[in-house]
Length: 365
Image 1 (cartoon, helix red, strand yellow):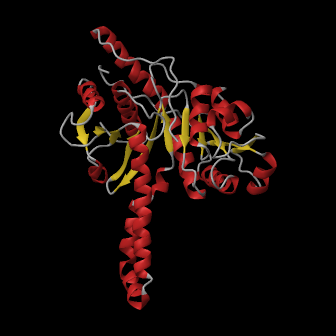
Image 2 (cartoon, rainbow, N blue to C red; image 1 turned 120 degrees about the vertical axis):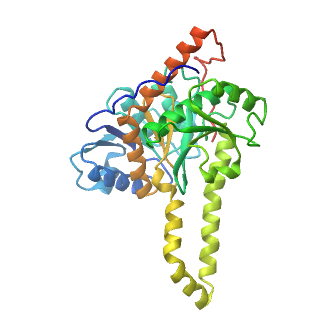
Image 3 (cartoon, one colour; image 1 turned 90 degrees about the vertical axis):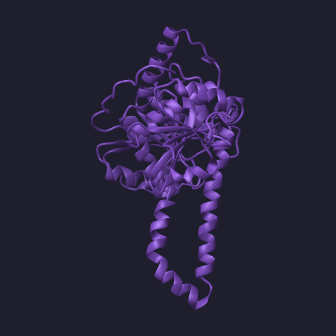
């Protein structure tokens, strides 16, 4: 993964088309449909396609804005179903129909709050991987007091190789630069020590690969450093990434629950809340993970955004925004261009590495 950084590519002019899995998620269309309509009304240049049970969507939506349409899908993949089996048996599932719209060029992005495994499997099977991508990676934006940072992989590959980690870094850096607007994003590996190369053999080899790139590689960071924003892109395997993100979610909820309990302890607690209310509001803004919308599946032919299964109206709207911005700034094409440049440089230098052009990614729940 060597060679010059590809030249910046202009964003797609005008609006983009976003297909929404209207039936997915814990709350289903009752939250997905209103959240999608909120985005559509605020962004009239973009077109939203609600995919799902037409009568249900029409009842919830009422009069549709001019930039919103409905594509019927008669089936839904439940959160407890096996993704591969469900996709084979439910050909008219909303996530599959929405993904097929991207495959046929009728949409540039798909957004789902439904079954994560089904969303990833549909993307890989229907859209395919970008040329040069060994395995797609699921990224998430973590909120810090100095802005969002990208953590990947958080769910697609439970057995990543060093070459996979180096490729995730390249894809995450492109997303940070094009979607988050970070110039020359700093890249780091999540490991057990901050010393360069400290960790298992996979981390040590990934360090060597990243040192050989033109990325701004900072070495290792530890878990305690994630909130300090020492890097803009943090790379790890899916098992570690999934544990980290769910711990963050649980810890933030636990802290605010403790505060709520203390403020409810009689008159003194209520008075304390009145004095601290402005500061608490500012802290809540920092912890507001709904603003980041959803997790892009980087490395597939098209924009795929998988948002939280518990997402409600507000977060759905932000997920639509992430999908539209990712498609508009041509992130999938930029990843393909960057990896092609890297591969050409490696071939010219006689560098060989592990390639899995025909392999299928693992899926971590």
